[in-house]
Length: 342
View 1 (cartoon, helix red, strand yellow):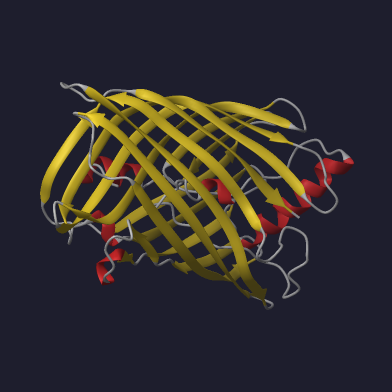
View 2 (tube, rainbow, N blue to C red):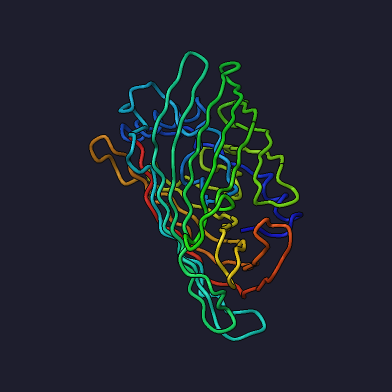
C-alpha cells in the first residue's frame, strides 16, 4: 500500500541495518554475536526488518545471507524459516462513518541459497504473507483474503574490510488469486554502498526501485545503525525507526515508529484494480533471546502500539489514478513472532 508521494519518499530515506555486537558476552551471547558478526561482514539485514518489516513491501534488504557454500554453517539453515510472525492492526472505526475494520497478517521468511568467494557473495531467499481484511459497515472495503510471495536475489562485492557494494532484485506476486495476470507481479530492486565507520556506526547510501510507488518509482535511501553507548542503539531500519535499550544480555526494549503497508492486484467491482493499505504505527518494541535450543538460537520479538493515518485506497490497475479511498480512526497494533539463527 502507499501514502502520499511526499510522505512516502521521506519515509523511504530510512533503512535497514544489522544488529551490532553485544557489549558484554556470556557463552550464549557470544554465539549470538558470532552470527551477528557474519551478518555485519556481509551486509545481511535481519529478517525482522524485512517486512514489518512488513514488511514490508518497501523495505529493501541489501543482502539475504552469507557464509560458505556449506548451508549448515552458523547463522544459516536452508529451507527452514528464519522468522515467522503474526500481526494485528485494528479494530479501526471508519472516519466520519459507521462500522470498523481490522487487518491481520501472517508472514514467514525462508532462506534458500547462499555462496561466497574471496570478495563476492550472494544469497537467495523467499517470503510468504497471507492477509485477512475484515470490515463492517462504512469500513467494509469488499476485500477478504490476500496473498504476497517474495523472492529476493541479492549479492555484493567487498571493496575493503569496511566497505561494500550491495545490489538486489526482488520480484513479488501480490494478489487475491481471483485474478491472475502479469500485473500481479511487482518488480523491485536496489543498489547501495555500505560502510562500517567504527564499531559504533555503520551506514549505507543507495537507490531503490519499486513500481508500486507510481510516478516516482526510484527513491534514494539512507540506512544507519548507531550505537550511542553500551546500553542504547538508534536504528533506521527500512520504514522503521527505533531506539533500543539493552537491559541485559537477553532482553532489550525501546520506542519505535514504523509504516505498515501493502499493495495487491484484486478483482473489485468486476474490474482489475490495485488495492493499497497504509498505516503509521507508534509504540514499544522488545526483543527477548530464548536461550540455545541445540544449534538453534531463537528470539522473541514483540511490537505493541497504536496505528495512525490508516488509509485504504483503490487505484487503476496501473496505479496512475485513484478510484476510491477511505480513512480510518486510530486503532490498536500488535506484532509478535520468532526469529531464528543457527
